[in-house]
Length: 125
Image (spheres, rainbow, N blue to C red):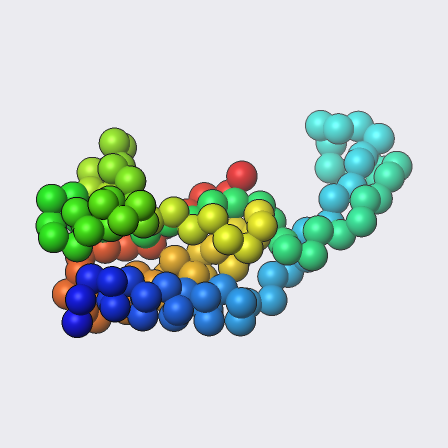
């Protein structure tokens, strides 16, 4: 399997996982006292149906492997200056952390099954 075919297979698994998630809506409210969550709610905003906001990615190591080099040459990843290796950034799904992270996990699973050393990661915004 070529690097391109592997990337496509992993990406498709990610899309299936990301679109298959139904995020729990995020409800935003304003309290009378902004530093006291038990104070009365003075305003409610429309729910954010995509759930909590966040980021997700897959880190591939080592950064000088043939797959990592292919990712960079084809603008699928960038050098990760903090963790080493290269990072595949999941930028789809608006701001939905749950969908992005599901995508990253599914994608990493496929890559690992094909011998690529990688792991998914993410953080809330």
